[in-house]
Length: 497
View 1 (cartoon, rainbow, N blue to C red):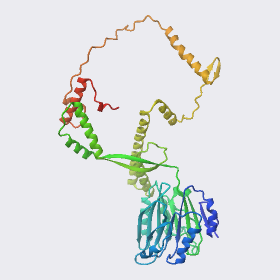
View 2 (view 1 turned 180 degrees about the vertical axis):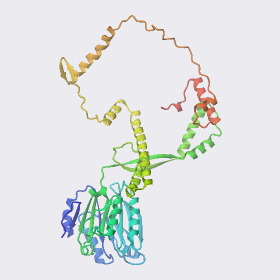
View 3 (view 1 turned 120 degrees about the horizontal axis):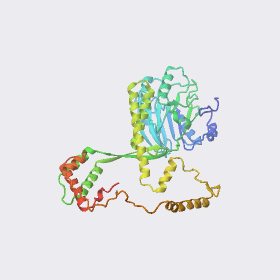
């Protein structure tokens, strides 16, 4: 018998009863349990029954069941159903060997993203919605005869496609003994995982006959504190069962980041075509028509892009653009870690880092500008105190009243009132009243009128160079300016701060 526990959350049990007694030791708030089994032939009714018996006897709830070496052919998969679970099979069409089956509880929301098999290698990719967190499960069976170099290429493609804001877990019989660190294939396997910050988390042997760890639970190193592996001996196969419990709870909130993308090329083309013939009316009426036309066309040729991002709220200025660039930086950073001496990747990382800083500064300024722009005085002071860390500050004031310091509210208020109510009369008494306020003759009477010459097309075009110098619009703006001067009225549609 193996020791009961290890320091990295791994347990070993000889029986299911021992496993059930230990379930209270696993402190997880939202546990997601994955059980993997190398059954070596599920066609045997006794072996298939042993799986269902384990599910019945175990006091916890298994969310996902991964069964390797099913030896089941595709035309017989309907014979291997488990009540309360949906099943996915990856079968070898040319023979009955190998094979992989994945069972997911019906109450769980999930998507099947991939199901491939080649030369005995099987990979089923599922994405679960576990407590609102995307949880990717890659169920794999790799036979010992499968080319290791091909497997490593497939594994690297899988790892490089994993996203930092999602859980990715690889479970299954990989047939690489991770406990034999001197093995070349083991060394290459472990180093490849480390390049992407992944590692094998289970440590107890899963094949007792060889005393090797062949069935693996692989996840990102950021998840190491959120996983418990339990290895259970059984006599229905030459592999032990491995039960992995994940704490998928995260103290984060999901926020929808959105961005509006406008096709300005099509917008300008449509705007030019629509303004060939302008309606008749006053300058103000034509201006309203043009603005309304442009806004309607802009809405027509714009689309909104949204993404649900897991954000803790520490950076409320996070935007769609910043989120996208941060993900890009993470991907390039992973490549830089893998190829630290590649000059092109290093230069690209420096460029993207600068862009991230620029975009972050911009949206941070915009966030605080919007925070204070339309806020009332009370909100402004509350926001300032929170930003400056003064929200819980002690604002008690001590003042000298008749030679003694006091912080008593009424006494302090009365002292301030006495000071400010008397300072005005005291200052007035000290100033002579016989003064000539226009001693130097600098105050001249106001003129009776002011004259503004009407503007012209040429002046409008020169003053607003960035606008298209079409005569149609220069005439419209000219008429708007001149009509504003002649009537003393400013167009309502332009009254925007």
